[in-house]
Length: 255
Image (tube, rainbow, N blue to C red; front, side):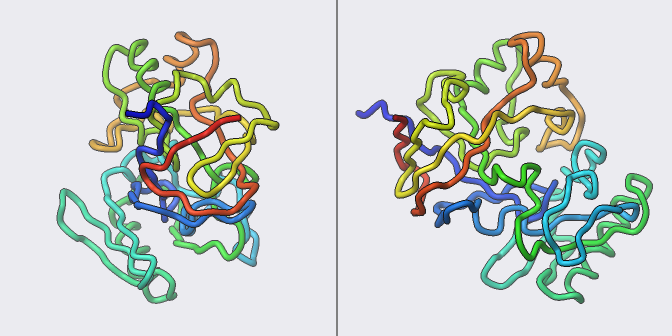
């Protein structure tokens, strides 16, 4: 059996701040991220830095887990073929609409305003990116998480850490812990049919303290990272330099 590092899980987050959607494969374009990843975001009423054309905007404009842990209490499943977003709470569907349409977005907004009442600032708006997706990093559109690094963090915390707390796109199994921090901009990273390069390490904030299964703040992972490793980083942002398809189970080659 090969010990080659492999893509163990591939995730996108169609609505920024909401739950992960697992996918089996994705076509990566040069300079792009996963299709439909952070395609939508929930803008809070006091958002002041939103481009009128639906372009990229800083995360401070949006409802995220940093300030609203309750957002994790809703599972959000997006069907990219139809544009429908289905919201579920405790396994029961509570709202469903085509969020590529104004009416559909209004339906989802109405539910979220009621569900998040008292948790957010002003009237919520569900908006769609027309250019760059609403990723935290405008230039690092793909995030990679080394599952061995997560396990080393668990050694420090003394309890399991759900990798989805770090909201990665590419979850890699088979790399040594923290090997990704030895990569440079000149490192060639081949995954499936695509080639990527390092953009930068990902500094972590209080959003990782929210348990994606319970919506509770039950950990302090930035503190654990600082105490255990002397930094706040987990995972790396990557940029696509050669297009191609990536699939769960694909091997990762680093040179």
